[in-house]
Amino acid sequence: MTFFQGAEQDARVPFSGAAHLLLPELILTLLVAFDIPRAAKFAGSVALLSYIIHTFATTTSGDSVDEYTIGSAVLGNMFFTVIYLVWFNDPMRHFGYLRDEDTSPLSSRPIWSRLYAALSLISNNRMIGWNVQVANVPPVKGTRAQFLVRRARQFILAYVMADVFDCIVRFNRPLYESTLPGGTRFPLGVIGYLQKSWCMVNWLLMTYSTLKVYYVFASIVAVASYASYPEDWPDVFGSWKDAYTVRRLWGRAWHQFLRRHFKQFGSIAVDTLRIPRGTFLSSQVQVHVAFAVSGLLHSFGDLANARATRAGSFIYFFLNGLAITFEDVVIRLAKSFGFTGLTTSTRWLGYAWVVLWVSLSIPVYVDWMNETGVWGKDTVPYSPVREMLLPWIKSTYLFEQA
Image (cartoon, rainbow, N blue to C red; front, side, top):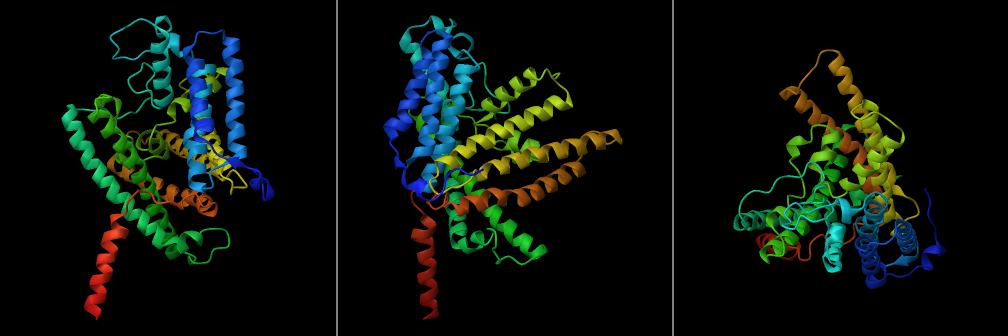
């Protein structure tokens, strides 16, 4: 999937936070909150979607990391949120906040109340606390004080992990570059596979801990300031004990920030094709639609990246859909031969399969990110490892050598 090359990148205009981030969110808030004819909402949403796509293709921040992040996590998410809130649902009539003392429909409330609700829905990716909350969200237990203590521990651990693994990745950058087509640093065979897998593990742990750092920090600020309840901030990731299939890795252990889009598109696809719910075919259609939407959303990050010339992200998510189909077929075959229920042995076999699949598939994604410079920035604002620990080790070592 080719987007543009060479001179076309020079034609991009500077990215504006006000015009290209805040304006789309403001327009969507108004479309959701105001009670206007459906035709007018649809027309407004089409114009907004066109504006978002135009932003992807014609602006640049000058930094590949920012462009990919804004393109996928922010504007890409916004693109599908427009469809979710305007095309597929009528939030003011059918959505409700479960802890709201006022049980009247949102559509009957004053405009300022509706605007606040609309803005909350746009920013609440997992729909936490609403009657449409996504599945597999970890529960939040304990008091506000207990929540803050627990999150403080999580923040410190995640920050240390993000810093350590970022340093490991940076110091081994030539190894990551060698995973690109034509790279020769990894030997063939088992040794080369293990070395490459080690590089991918470091990158995954860096990504995991970085996402957790910023989410946990935001939750601490929101809950400590009494702007939110602890229940509004469940853990961003599930338990890794659940990741004994690729399906459960994506559906339970990894973050569920985009699940509302996946569920809605999958349900509509199944209903449109008139496939009976609860069947194997229904499950597979929903899986592949979900990964197609995820691939497209991440491809918006590719489109926003001025250095990218192809949608390198899409193929990675497409392959994960195929992996889930493969494991579902294997599980069905195993059941037909009398293997039923989950045992310790089958669980560990599942973990081994997931590790194997991730080690084989993640280079498809990581190689592209390295190729387009997406991971060039520091993952944390200050690195104790690089600024304090390594200089101390270096000075101590040199002093002893002298």
